[in-house]
Image (tube, rainbow, N blue to C red; front, side, top):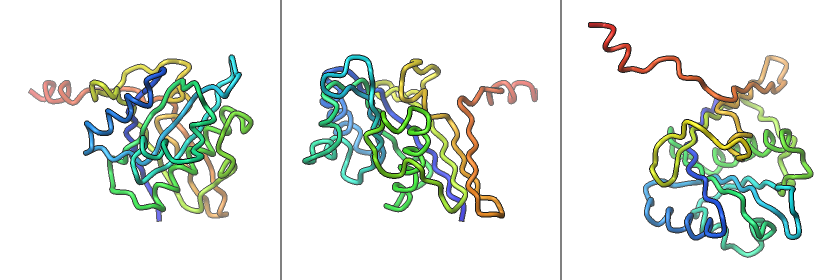
Length: 193
């Protein structure tokens, strides 16, 4: 059975107050259940090399970060954090895990396994057709972002990732980096009159 996930990402939380800002945002926006997160940051003593971690949670992202032995403790300097909310469904554990695995696999291939704190799922391919559509939102205004910083982890993840399984049971990857605006609904309505 095909799976389609529309994930609305909120961020980026950055700087030395990133974790406090995230915790406050989650407390003020309890109607947005965020089950996925993207982290980019520097390991101890690193000056120029960022590392990445992609994770899932059912308890809230800020609470997950406070768990003992979480990978965020390996990144004392956080460059940015994005949190992901499933818009088109109320995901179960399998859905969250499937989306996490696909994102880990994609990002590890883009940045290199040596820069990923994730050690599992780096070569994952689903056994079914799976589509992830990502939308990027400013966490302060809750408005969709028109532009993303060129060094953001959000720039690494394309707007559309599609894994399609062919008749030979091979998983093929398709992606579209940035969806382009083609028309606005208002323009079409006006042109009808």
